[in-house]
Image (cartoon, rainbow, N blue to C red):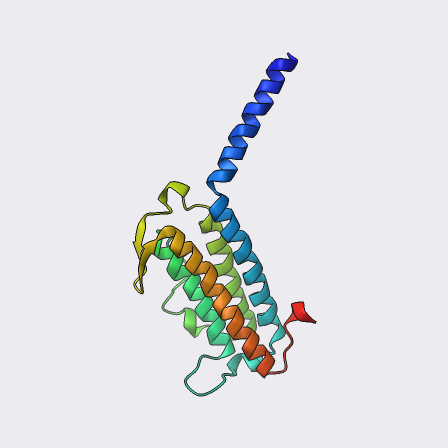
Length: 172
């Protein structure tokens, strides 16, 4: 009986380990993206309501517009990989959202959406080509683009914060 239990345990661990390895790329990207998204949300909360309209110069996106751009990017990139945005999300009206609380809520919803979809990309499909409109790349490139896009705008928002006397919460 002990031998049977031991064999069953080894088989279970082997299957679990193989499945974990199958999604290693997706879960790693998801973990890095989670950190970036968390810091963007911290920055979003650190800005005052009035600072959401601040822009470094005319013609450049404001704080609120940059946050909504990140939300839109999450939905757009995921949609190109076959994941339609939730039915209650209208990408054409996303940039019309106003107010700090509403903008943060829209960003958090897009963050949760894209984090969930990352692990739904099958490992076997990571090399499938996708036309993202701005470039053709494989799905792995698309997942990396999601991560990079969030990181790029985290940097933008750090510069916006410093220009407005807002200290990024994690560096206090």
